[in-house]
Structures are given as C-alpha cells and as structure tokens.
Length: 416
Image (cartoon, rainbow, N blue to C red; front, top):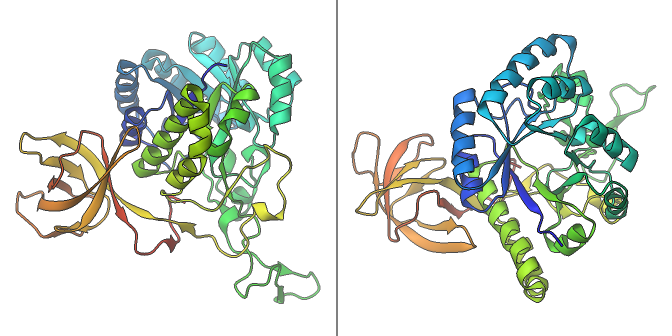
C-alpha cells in the first residue's frame, strides 16, 4: 500500500519551518484573506513566498487554504488573491465554495484544487461531481466512518482522499457553525469563529426566566458542546487500509511546540508502520503518550469506528492538559554553541529543560547562560517576546524546539 502524505498545519513562518524540519510531507497555511482561521497570524505574500521556497527546497509541498463560504463582496478580492497565488506557486488550493472554485479554475488552473471538508464531502457521488469539475482531492467530512471512506475509495479510485487524523473536532456539521455569528457577529464560515462551543452553558425553561437548570451534575453548568480531540495515531493501519492518501492534522492556531511534537510522533508511527509493522504494534502506546505531551483535551477516535457516544464529549470543564511549556525555537547557532531564541515563556539559568528534534530525539539539558537584547548577562528571562542569546549544557541544532515541564498541567489555554 502507498505510504500516506503527512499534512501539517502552520499558522506562521516559524510553524511552517518547524513542520518541515520535523518530518511533514506537506504543510497547509492560510493567507491574510479567505482563510478559515482569521485569528491566526497567517501569511502575507512575502512570508508565503519565503515559506513556499523553504519547503520546496526540502521536497515538501505547500497547500493554501481559501475555504471561506464567500459573499458577493468577497469575489473581486478573491480574483486578485488568486492572481497573486498564481505567481507564488503553491502546490494546491483548499477550497469549499463553488464560486471560489470556479475563479481558481479560471485564474490559476495549473495549481491543484482540493475540496475542503467545509464543502460537506460525505458520499462518493459528491466526490465524482468535484472530480468532473477538475478537483484533484477531496477532504472528507469528519462525520464519515472508515467503512464509508473505503467505499468512496473503491468507487472513485482516481480521486485523492485527505482525512483528518488528529486535532480538535468541531461540534457543527463539517465545521459549518452558526453559533459564533449569532452570539458575537463574527462569522465562523468566513474565518472569524469565536469558539462558542467551548463556553459554559445551562438550560432555562421558557416560563421560568432566570431559573437555570443543570444539564449535568456540576455546580458550574456544563460544557455542552465541548468535544474531545481526535487522535488516530494508534490506528494507522486501519486508515491506510481504508485508502486515505493524506493524513491531515488540525491546528492552524497552535504553537511550534504542538507542531513539532505531533509531526514527529506521526512521522515515526507512519514510518514504523511501513518498515516494521510489528514494531509499530509494539509502540502504539508510546506514540499516544508522545502526542499527549503537547496541550490536548482527552482523545477519541471521532466517527471512524461508528457514531460517537456520550463519552466523546467533555462535560465538566474546558481546560486542557499541558505537560510542557514552549520556550522557543532554536535560531542560528554560533561557534561557541550559543544560539538566538525568540522567547515564548519564562525560563532561568540553572533550570532543567528539554531539547526536542526530529526522529523522536529528546535531550535533557540545563540553561547555562542568557544574554538579553542589550547583550547583558541575566539570570532569567521573564518577558516573552524578547530576542535572546542562550547557552545550554548541550548544543542544539537549528530549528530544534525547547520546552520545560509545566507545574500547572490543567489550565485554560489558547492553544488547546
């Protein structure tokens, strides 16, 4: 069987380079316009040019999301955007809206067009329809089982199939949510979701205004729409057997630490599965333990093995587990072993931290020296965002990730 593509999200140039370094086959990104993650940093044209060049030099593909559900006012701007993308030359466009698809087909037909999960790809006739329009790949709806995907593969053998294997699940059908627009005026289907599915809810009976009834035995109410995260790292053979061509990881709002941990774990699991299936079987729990080291909610297998039951939801809280804190990505390394670091969180001299690299390389070390932006030696770096020169007991490599154990493992976190 063909080894699947590992497709990793990147919210910015740092995350893109991390994904490439840690073993992605392809990376998907969003521009400043027409991306369903408007709150992510996203890429301007120059960053996209840099990212595409960086990836292509290393044999990695870049897919650009243009998957909003467009209104009339979006179409002129979309034409201009596709003209710019034609010059930037990404490998594929991820599109949901038929009108946007038509514009891309006319303006940059040489760029592959993939059909987003937002387009509601739940059956083989839908796949045949998009294939006739010139699409190369469909991203299956998260609501499909492996049995259904297997039938799509059998009936539409020429169509590439991309499916989510890891990350947050959306409570709305194929991600098309109306709650955000209704509550806040920010349209999830145009990239501005406020994630109301993670809010705390209670029930009020119509004739008893102000009297809130508990939905679950918890004095704080219930997180009624709060689904567990998807994790299929223990089921790679089943995904491959179903005929999935591309394993997609969710998370274009996540940090480089998340990107690094998930990418290298799935890279190792996929490679082991194809080179030594017995080794993969033996290491299943290790793979899962590894992806649990970044910020996560509880895991489930989504719809792949049948409809989720009550245990697929999180009722008591909206927090995630956070075993490690992200300190930064290693920049240029000097001859003396010190390196540039754009600091993400606080750390101090003498503190024990970890260096993580590709192929599951993890190395414990100690912080030996820190120079601030003024070149002064300091004992700690308490202010995230500073550009530091750091020296460790061990010399890391460019693009390695630094992390340290979290003392507060259960917390609200924007990266969950």
